[in-house]
Image (cartoon, rainbow, N blue to C red; front, top):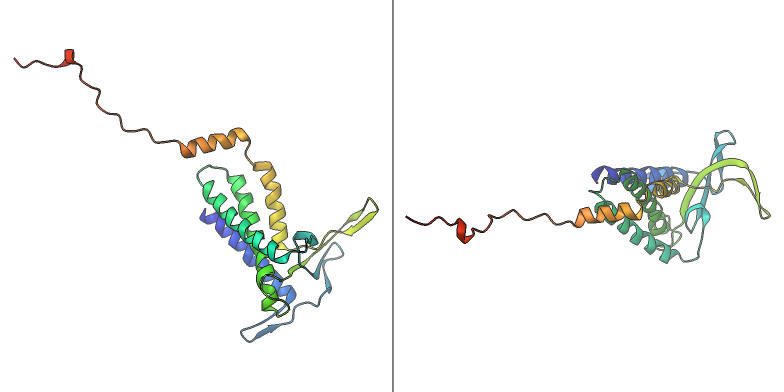
Length: 208
């Protein structure tokens, strides 16, 4: 449990450090300008760029127009993921628990943006912050139903952690039979200590 939570915390730290490096900050007398909105810098040529964008929605720019609900849902989901990590602690499902830890770290990383960034940077109240994205990857051109995609959606470390976690979850999610077996083992009662068998009348030794 501790190692997996450490992984989640590490994802949050790396995610927030990279976002602050991109967006910049002014804290404790330290001023770092960061990148300008929509500024793009090549990292591995045209294949990998750091492009600074923000979105008020979910991963890869998905937006349902309800920032407060989305933030509260993220809080509830994070608490539920911690509960699942504790519940599966003795099941030996390492792959499943690793997936949960990755999703937890990614969810909390983006949750910090949504809840605090608006107030911290002075552009919106609590729960109305925008998520910082910057990883910009070139992909072969895709034309689907008239929509052309030349580069992948800009994302961040938290998005990547959630995506990898979901893929692992698909592979390692237990079948109904395995889940039932784990539940039976978890709820099985410890058998009581054996007691001395009753002494039958014919077994009694008469006093002589």
